Image (cartoon, rainbow, N blue to C red):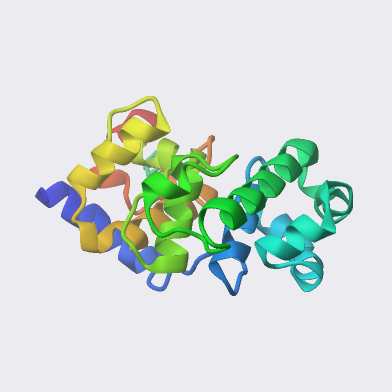
Length: 209
Ligand code: SF4
């Protein structure tokens, strides 16, 4: 890891010493559902709807029994609810039919599930199984590229470059820190003038003369 990246990691550790998964869940299937629901929605909103949903149905079999129309009643406020309901129902059916009702623990298998792309699969891997991965959402995409930890336009390319730039044992922690920094100072309109990362950030230096 080059010394500039080491300094960035040190500052992120000071800013976010104890980063925790923002979505509430108690099983890998609950996390899978919460992550599907979090697309185009805040984690806070997802955490508001999931307690009632999980009390009604928190296994693939129970989701199938609940049915798509009833599922929609629980998840409507997260937006794009028809597509999300279809993905959750499809994932539940595939889990029952192909995976003995269990959430698989590999990126390849997770990505076979309807509505599950690389980012969602990576979130499930790191938080449900503790397996290192580097989920790239819009915050990580923005912050990592501003900090020149990656030079990429797509989440998948950013993911690949981050995994090369940062040691594997730091992936889970660094992912969360970049998410939280993207929700804080490094929003689309960044507050570079008060950001501790400014001395090591090429994009920040363009903003602050
Ligand atoms: Fe983001 Fe600005 Fe901080 Fe760079 S200096 S990480 S662009 S807020």
